Image 1 (spheres, rainbow, N blue to C red):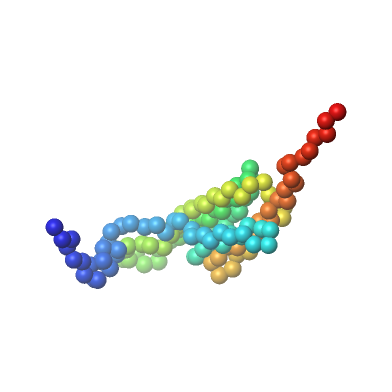
Image 2 (cartoon, rainbow, N blue to C red):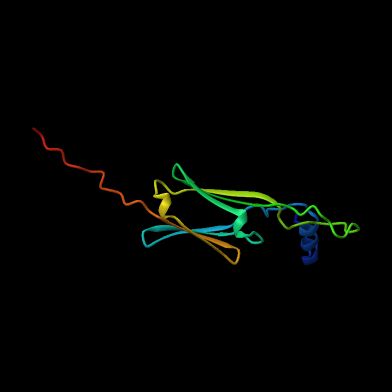
Length: 131
């Protein structure tokens, strides 16, 4: 049996009415450069004050919370679909043991950029002199 053909507009209306939303997940790029980890997180619609970055036990956690303005100016407004995110979103990344005092964070144009210097590891191998 052949699958039923969907027309272009069908998929537009499916997306409009399906109720699915993945807007609470911040999208991130992670790369390594110049002896540091770099995390770039898209957090559009948030202010710098809405975002918190913590480092604990080798994990860097990015949290952002946006509260909904409950004061409706237009009482007759009836939403069909709301896609703008209100609430809390969190991402957690394992970076190993790092010096949290050296982590740099900058938020500009909806993008949070973290620079996490990697901890300089001493060689784990050592020759032991036999007595």
